[in-house]
Amino acid sequence: MTQTTFSAAAFRGRLRQPEQTLRLQLSHCPQVIDWPALDAWLRDKLGLALQSPLPALPFAAEQSPAGVAGALCWRILQVAAELQRAARMPVFEPGRILAVQADELRPGGWLAEVAVAHIDYVPAQSTCLVYDAATLLVLGVAADPESFTTLESLYQQLEVKVLQPLRAVMQVGLSALPLLACAHERGIPWRHLGAGLFQLGWGANRMHVQHSKVGSDSALGVAVAQNKWIACEWMRRAGLPAPQHRMVGNETEAVAAQAAFGWPLVVKPTDCDRGEGVTVDITSEASLRSAYREAAGLSSQVLVERQVAGTCHRLLVVRGEVLYTLKRMPVAVQGDGQRTISELITAANAVQQALPNWAREPLYPSDALALACLQQGGWSLASVPPAGAWARLRRVESTQWGGLAEDYSVRLHPDNAAIACQAAALFGLDVAGIDIISPDITRPWHENGAIINEVNSAPMLGQSDSSRRTLPRVLKLLLSGQGRIPVEVCVGASQALQMARQRQQEWMEQGVACYVTSHGLTLDALGGVVPMAQEGLFARGMALLANKAVAALVLVVQTDEVLYNGLPVDRLDRLMVSGEPLLPLYKGASSDGAARVDEVLGFLQTLSGGAEPIRIEPAVSCPQVENALSLAT
Image (cartoon, rainbow, N blue to C red):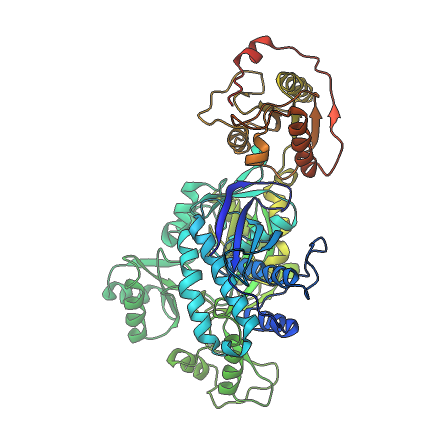
């Protein structure tokens, strides 16, 4: 069973994410392991791209008993990280093996101490759940890979027993994982604040993100954008091209709206997303009534809309800049001149079904709706489309059914980009997905009757190649300075505070609002005492990193607390020492102050890139502040 031995979500210099220490229990290790076969199984059945073991591992030789246990642990860590990502948990590093030793209580067993990523607000039992599952899976496949041939059953067990419980404790949208992965790759700090809400960056440069909404979005604008009827009224009054529609309360009113608009029509719920309940190409009263009933089943407010010619294009607007334009087309199969549409559907679905079920896209349909779409295009399931021809299986693209996307970013007409930016600004959205229906997005909207169909306050990010390519630009537009602020540390007892005040004054002379905190005292940019309910350097540092008023931070290390709790930052810009001994955080701890200082400095140097600490003689004396300092032990 996995045990959590250190649960503080702190940086300790071993991972790029906040970490915790676990103890893994390997009940047994097979004496003979076909390593290439094991790795091939993990790659082919779980989609896992195995990383090579870290060269510093003392048990890298897989032939020794300890080496076998260590090699298995390294694979367990990678499987556990992959399962957490499948549950949309932002775990981007497998972790690090700290020690492996024989289990004295269980002959043939091994114990491994490992450092792995810690996600705030994820309970310890959930962490243990996924590492227990990964341990059982890797040991089982290593011992007998032939016993894991019924993959659908295995996938279902993992889904029900591991992934669903993980998703239940951390409900994260589809956009969050690729956005956070990009932030991790670019060295942008982030933390989970609970309920799928994340803080990217620190202090004055931090921002909040939930799904793909950002904290700087207008709450009123978000609410209005979700109501298609009111949103269109806003756009129309702002001089933007919007749909012509009417809200109806029953089938009779829907038929009356047709008399005003003519055919074809679109029927949609007013307040649903992702294409839910939308029916297009309505050309008869019977289909109009049916479409109304479908939409009314999802919302009490239904729109009947005049359908305009063209295809929907999604434009991503971030702080007034269009980052990409995608032509969104319904799910379809592409002909090869040889196979029937039915065979093309079967082949496409076989590719999806070979993947773990959590990595699959929606299967290609061959139901009544698909048959109707094929018939409209002059096809049937027995038709053999020419090479390159597309046979549509749905009339519209949606999250439920999937779809195709063609990048039109470089061909977008500037006038169409302009109305997209105007629409985002109208609703006060820093991140918006603007849907423009146009017969030709390369031509101006005012020449071909294009309209802004919807304004989406939470557009999907990172779900296509085009979108993934723009994520670095998204983060650059949203965050200043990689989201970071200068963070420095002063180490010592009473004199460290004077050093910190000296550095604070130097920052202030540059016009930078610098805060200072020790484990028991916090000072604002003007040197005033900031009362805090929290005690401890870690807790107070975390509070200041969330404070938009903080443009620089100096941490005062006066005790050995960092050895127990770590730091809330992964990187230090400057490390300064006074040469004084440190006090122990806990009573009864070793009184060897010099050794304690060396250990603390060794830890802090790992966060400052190994740079030698700077010895500074304090030049500022603040007796009134020093008297307020409480060195609780």
